[in-house]
Image (cartoon, rainbow, N blue to C red; front, side, top):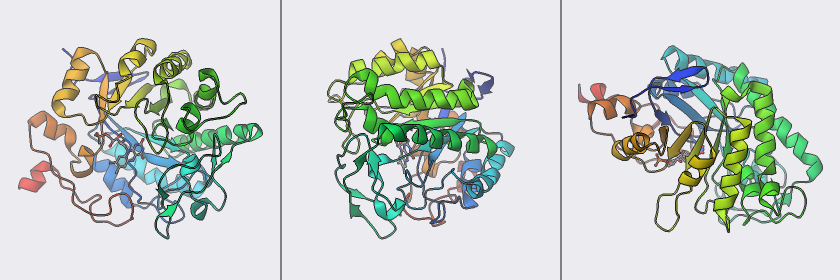
Length: 356
Ligand SMILES: Cc1cc2nc3c(=O)[nH]c(=O)nc-3n(C[C@H](O)[C@H](O)[C@H](O)COP(=O)(O)O)c2cc1C
């Protein structure tokens, strides 16, 4: 029976276990979106994961709405990421870069321009800026003639990721950001080739994915989706056929793996069984998993691997703690992802060090 501690093959590489670190924004860049050196310590400490999926990394100024999020559009950023990927590799790990455009969730105080989205519909709530939270502003609908430029920004960031030493990229298609804003119908009311039908709403996701595969190879491209539940005002009125179609088309393109962040509640039925049917490649599930139900998911074949997010914040040695049955540490209270401070970041000890 397969367990989380068994290796798994992703194209040409074999991961030593099926425990991935889920992408988590931690805000440890400069206010110009350049990675700070401590990011290398943080990820190297977590290199025991079969694969690290990095924090969401903005691909462009237009897409960067999170204070202190380290980006990947400039040479300066590429240089600053190199020590991070090197530290992970020296520690025996692997890391892919999650590529992020926040779309309508970006505040003009961050980007200097009106945000773009599928349609001119503002998200609920407030945006993060360096001056604190501010109400979201109404985005403008991205013009069709701007889409090649958006795709080019993703491709540029993917090429930069490879130059910076990442083992691949993950397209962030989840959590109410621009790809998700096009996919699901609460945020997409377009009447052109990128709105309306399922095929049209999935077009941006599939075009970006194909462009990434064409430029860095399918072995190095993964996609993350959040098919069920509302995130940042993004939800779909009929998600099952939408995500079945998306899964079929992604299967045709071919991916390193597909990761699903699923809300786990009775009110929001999981779509992973439908997606599992349509997508024949490696499927990674995420969301509130423990060691026990993660093992159950891979043993039953519902998933090939599990990604863990919050447990990784305070447990850099999560794989060892799971394997040895050691207790998990709790995250310290603090600003978490909103401030580039040292505390509560790369200062969580391994279990042996904590009890020594
Ligand atoms: C601090 C924090 C930051 C996060 N940042 C991201 C992100 O950058 N990209 C992303 O796709 N998901 C992000 N997430 C969601 C996580 O990847 C994951 O889906 C979520 O925490 C549920 O998994 P878990 O129960 O294992 O924590 C973040 C979650 C947390 C707690």
